Length: 498
Ligand SMILES: NC(=O)C1=CN([C@@H]2O[C@H](COP(=O)(O)OP(=O)(O)OC[C@H]3O[C@@H](n4cnc5c(N)ncnc54)[C@H](O)[C@@H]3O)[C@@H](O)[C@H]2O)[C@@H](O)CC1
Ligand SMILES: [K+]
Image (cartoon, rainbow, N blue to C red; front, side):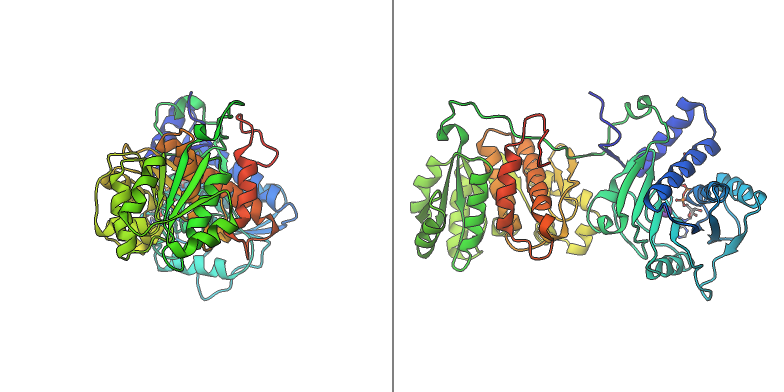
């Protein structure tokens, strides 16, 4: 089945190819395509700010600016007061024609001068840079971006917020903070993850009438996760059919991590969940959640019989990096069972790297990813796509790179991006839940790729449901009830909770 352009994410080179394909297939001129972009932008402006009477359009030197000039003509025809601010004395190529069209319609162009105040308007339109930006904006562009961001007036970005790298989502310098971004023809992958997510605001795709046949020859670089439900359970299922997850972790002072992972595994449908932890935690964990089978382990010998009984391991929540955790880590990895590695499970791996040959899912946050790749967190965040792919191929695992717009990659180059989740989820224990959910999916028979994608989607959507009462103060355990509801959604994904 061909991928819907609404789900497919492309690199800039691919978007350029799509643009060329569109011009051929539609037998339209560049000007016509730009005009369609301007119409889509005007439609978005009207929908989001129906009361706006005065707008400023900030135009850069390239075709992104061209979109802006044509939008100016449309908005003026519709009776809006339009101020056009240009970054440069002249525009290039197709944009020069658009600029001439604006001037021929009686429009004025004010050249940007950072000693003057921005016009007083209801909405700023950012038409400075699109996919043609190849480095941090120059000084003039940066000053205009900063002035718009400082104005506290809503911003509509055309194609992407200026200053953002469309391929990586990197913010090498000043970047527009948009309220709404209307992106043209195809989704650019960099808009969907990491720092970019804060800059894009509400994202809309306008395909400009480009037919499906233009997209179909191109393999998207990544896909957006879809809201899939779990396969339904057979009525005759018994607890043994849904796997046995063993959580290994909970060093002194860190019992909560193991408990959250275990409880999430239960709520996500694992048949049995055991926890191997420090002796002093056993009583408290058993009392808090009697459905968990909690056992004391003091070293490899006591862990081994538990490993034999388990079908899936969740290795790392609260494990610590001391002698106790390290010994359990080595023993657990030698068991050859499908494994989810998180937290100190990953930190130990960074110290003692290995390539996995048994099914393994790793769930690093950017800090853990940085240790695993010997890079800085900043370098990871500058190009999360490269980082997650490198982790997957270097370690031979399915890798979830957590953070806004979580990424899932496998060693074959497959890549999915999670469109859900919220900043309330940046709090303690959220990662432990994800570990437990991935383990539960593996336990119920999913392959690592499917398990990771399902778990990431469930976790993020549970977070969004739980955050309806506010992102601030959201607790990891608040996700457990919505998680259960989502996990029971109908197989066609039609859930009243979705
Ligand atoms: N080609 C097409 O078929 C369509 C293109 N469209 C628009 O065209 C845009 C792409 O246009 P362009 O390729 O002209 O590129 P842009 O308009 O994104 O920007 C390129 C311009 O900015 C300058 N520039 C690049 N990096 C800079 C930096 N760091 N500091 C200062 N100046 C810098 C370049 O010299 C060039 O003049 C898209 O993002 C989209 O908005 C739309 O009209 C839809 C159709
Ligand atoms: K822009």
